[in-house]
Length: 271
Image 1 (cartoon, rainbow, N blue to C red):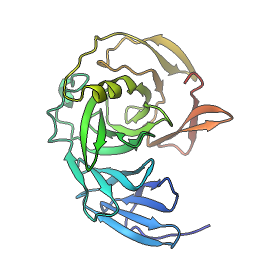
Image 2: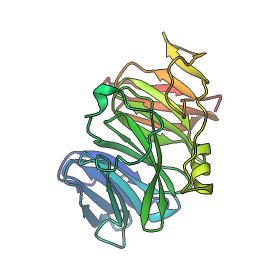
Image 3: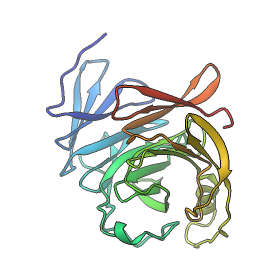
């Protein structure tokens, strides 16, 4: 239909806003180009990341607002009425938050290179996956954001995060070849009710689903992941480069791209 050449370097992520008139493209130079699809030209160039901009996502219900992250370990909130970001945080410097699970000793020095962001359908909650294996959940509050909580389940970097539509179910994919599904709704609602009061949930073991030999089956979760445990765990076997939740024939499915030339499809019928 159309062909655009607006980015100077390799494009890492695309995001279309709700009104489908703006397309954001993040590239290796750290720039985010905002393409006006009606006038077929770049309406704005956002340049604040000092390294590769790995991910960008428009906020649902807010066609002029977006979040981005990059290998400079920074997460940013933008409004297209402004040329500068409204809010910036550095994941490496912001280590005061209480993580849902302790780090293992060999991962303390892993840099928090930010790989992926995803915004929930409400538009105010978004997640960020990073090289240190952590998933961080943020809440947008006007012109700034606050980190609500974080948790860890992947043994290597979190390469992809993706909220399922109309829910706080979060898919994560990692460099460890695993795909996990998390339900963060209770934590999000808990923080919303008492944002300043720390709360503690008793550790419980839940059933998880592990894929081996082409079959997905329920198994006892032998390893504690902290207070938040995955509802689903799939041993994909290849580093996850990209994933997406979509409906196929009425059922929710996960589409996964990895380092092979194939796209994998996993059913999510029970969710």
